[in-house]
Length: 149
Image 1 (cartoon, rainbow, N blue to C red):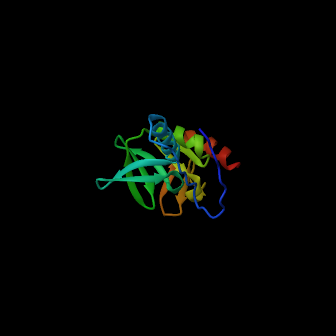
Image 2: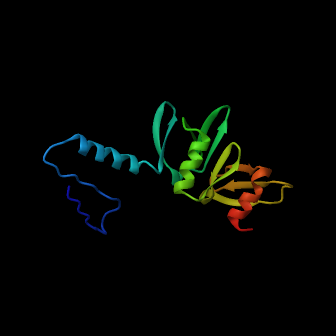
Image 3: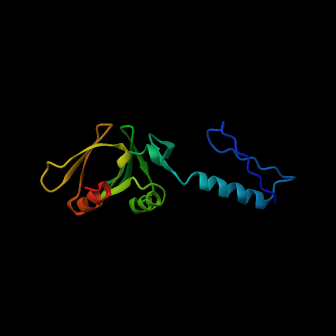
């Protein structure tokens, strides 16, 4: 198999072409591997009986409520079938700005507008979209280390 890489500064995203004499299981396997690697930074979520593919960078927070896992993005709530710990593991591999702030919530610090430290014993987090949440007492030290304060 020959492999060729062509650099084109005009492209917005990578574009892959596979040239072959005929389709084979080896080619199909290669295509599947490329597709899987392309979805590593995305998550499948549901809303109003529709399936959405959300990019991790756009997610504001991920939290557990009433036994379900919700994703907040642009003041919208989506439901995912993934477990919170699974999402945390995926995010820690690819994005260092997602931090677990409680047993039930992970937040994207790229979406944090400010932190209110005036509340005794906890930290109040406000996002750019107007969402407010709180850091559990157990995770305050981790948040302060992340923020280097």
